[in-house]
Image: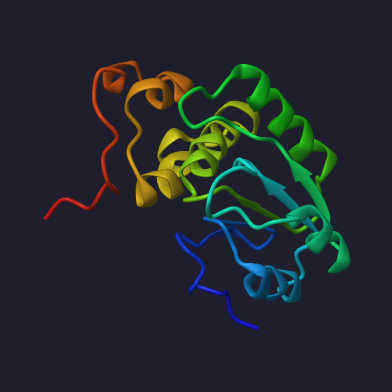
Length: 160
C-alpha cells in the first residue's frame, strides 16, 4: 500500500515514522494498513477538525494511542517531555504522529531529532521547513531566537 498522501500535510520521515494533520476515520484505517502500530496525537480534542473518540477508533484498529494535548498558543517543556517519553516507549514501533495541521508535530519532531537523537540541524529541520517556519512562541519553543519576533511563515522553498 502506498502512503495516503491525501491526508493533510502528510509526511514520511522514515520507514517507521509518518506525520500529518488530522486524519479522518477512513484515513486512520489507511494509516493502520501501512503497518502503523502506534499513534501520538498532539492536537486538542476540542478542535472542530478533531476526530471524535479517536483513541477508541485507533484501539479498535489494533493501534496504541497516546494523546498529548498541546495548546497551539502555549507549547510547554512538559509537553515536550511527555512526547519524548512516548517516543522512547514506542521505540522500534511504526509510529504516526499527528495534530490538526502537522505544525505542532513538525516542531516537536525537529526538537526531538536534533536534541534527543542528535541529528544534524538541517536534517532535523527538513519536515518542519516543508510545512511551516515558526515564529513567536513556537520559534522560542524550538530555540530559534532570531524568529521569536516574527510571525509564522509558510514552507521554506529552495532558493532559485
